[in-house]
Image (cartoon, rainbow, N blue to C red):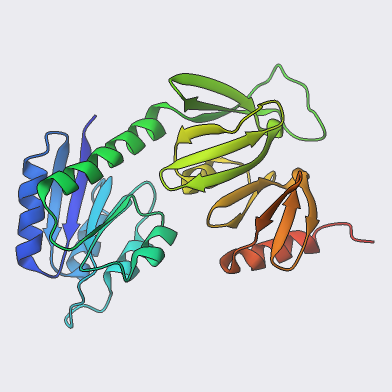
Length: 251
């Protein structure tokens, strides 16, 4: 598999170093290197970029910061952030960063991050699909949609109405199901699943959790109960949960 990438960093020396690392990586093709967000954004929509290396070093000449630029990127472009320290780490991972590299980056660290990206894209392109089966009957009023997901060298077929909730663990997810004794662990991002699962059946309530709406047993101000598990409601998702509550037939 070949991946395309671009580099955005205000420090030309670091940008050049990243260029050299890309040249040493056989499965990477460089689309462009930029020191200004405006130039990067102008070219972005004319190219197919899988991975964007984004520096978080501030530049007085730029109207957009690296984080603001990242928010403008469309799917399926994913970001690897470059920073002096961990100050921006939590905000970057809220954007579902593939990785966050700090300090003086050596090639082995770079290659480890890009290898993780390769595994992630490989899974997205070949390992997970959602399909509607015409030969199955409706159950509990839900459409008999099916998810196929790779886990532990197996391709597992799951009906969506078997899923209780999904927990994100960085580059992995744990899928808790009605007929599985233990959660299914798969290399996949929670954001990717959020985009693929039907929002009529599922809702993301926290940066680390997606739940099936029919499994919600109780909703509290800051958490909800899903088949005996108390799941937190993130501040960023409370408006979405309130909208769900407003649609319920509350007596």
